[in-house]
Image (cartoon, rainbow, N blue to C red; front, side, top):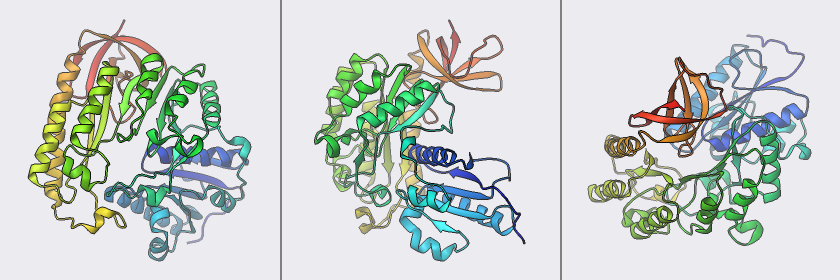
Length: 436
């Protein structure tokens, strides 16, 4: 079928995967518009002649979603709805050669660090004067701030270094400039993200300077909340906790992926720590910041995880009583050290273990939430759904953590505003509250 003619280029960017990909798409969107090219993000209209798909290659489900999305737009190209399909991001970085052969209908493939090449393909130039500026794709009151790219850790199960390369920190001055631009455009909450945020600064400043970055960002006028994600536990810089305690706009929140609760499994995973050291770190964090919410992620079903090691992880979760927790079934990733081991745990067993951990965490979360009944919290309103306003406390990150539900019938609140609200009831992953 003949493709529809288009005098002017219009690009639709489709983003899959994590918040880091979201930031990359926002940078692409900003650069395209800075070049005078019409561009949208995940447009529902069929009025774009070019689609750029920013893919995820993290685990099996994410890879399949990326491939399905590529095939859907390839079909749209063959039907004449769009003219060009370009693919970028982690999946493209990792599997470009084989994907080119399997899906030849894609016009061009780009890796995670190919922004300039992608822009050139779209008849745009990389504009250095736009560094630190971003058009957000989520509500403007919160923004992800990517403080570094890549990772130098040797974790046995992880393919991220294969897709994102080695660790590169962004200079403090550049990040502060971006934070100021975001604040000027209405952003009140910064969510700091990286592959490994606690490694920040080692390449640029020859020492870990995450605490210095936090101080500088904390000084930016208009930023009410700063939230720290993806803090690697080994070598965790404890001075970060001092800054968190000292600065009121740094949330009492820490996302610290621990991956397992068995020393044997942590060794197999090459995490550079033990169960005992991890427990000691959690104790230190809670001692320094008693009111902190700790979020972690775990992996169930890694090669070598017997029923005994899994029970150790269950015991670890029960004893640690994390405020927030996510768990993934192990994904057997090519070219990782773990791939040299036999993936001998059936998918059904992996999923059973995931469900068992989440059932345990659900009970812990309910107990924690019920302790909040009768207390008043500062709540950031994210959206309105049906008859409810949906918000978050400082203890919760968007999309992955608990939410605060406020009846919209008797209360008028604005999206992106803070309100003080008293908790009247609690469920496993939600608080019900009333403005005061």
